[in-house]
Image (cartoon, rainbow over all chains, first blue to last red):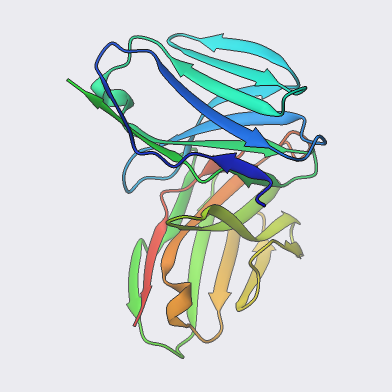
Length: 110
Length: 113
C-alpha cells in the first residue's frame, strides 16, 4: 500500500464548477501538506501549503487537512479553463523529504 | 521556475551509455533533489543533497549517482543507462529542510533506446 493515495482521474468538469481534489494517507507522522499544480510538460509549482490540521484559503483555492481521518482536500471555486492541469498532493514528516501522490489530471471545459 | 535550470532539456541515448543531467540554481538554497516522474507512479525521489558534498539516497536510487561540489550545482549520473530509466527527471530546491517547501525546475525528458 502506498503511503499517499490519490485518484489519478481524469476529472472533467464544466467551467465555473467547484472542483474537489483529495488525497488519503496512512502515516500519521505527516505534518506538512502541500498541493502542487503541474501544467503539461512543465515542472510542478507550489500552489498551497498547510501545516497540521485546518483550512487555508488563497483566492479561489482552499486547502483542507483532516489529520484525524488522514485526508486532505483542495477545492477550486469558479473553475477556469486555465486551471486545467495535473494536481499533486505532497506531504512531509519534517525530515527533508516529500512523499507525493500520483496526481489527478483535471480538465475544465469552457 | 524559481531560479532553477536543468540541462539538457531533452536527451535520447542508447542502452549502456553514461548520462549526466545537470541542475543549476541561483537561489543559494541548501537542499537539492532529483526526482523521476513516470505514469502511474507520480514523483519519486532518486537522491537528495543537504549541502555541498552531502548527499543521500531516495526511494529509487539504484542505477543512479549524484554529486554536489558547489552549492548551485547538483549532477545526476546514470552510469550505464537502461530502458527502464526512460523518464522525465525533475530537480527541486528548498531552503527549509524541516517543513520542506520545494520548488521545481522545468524537467529533462530522457529516452533510453
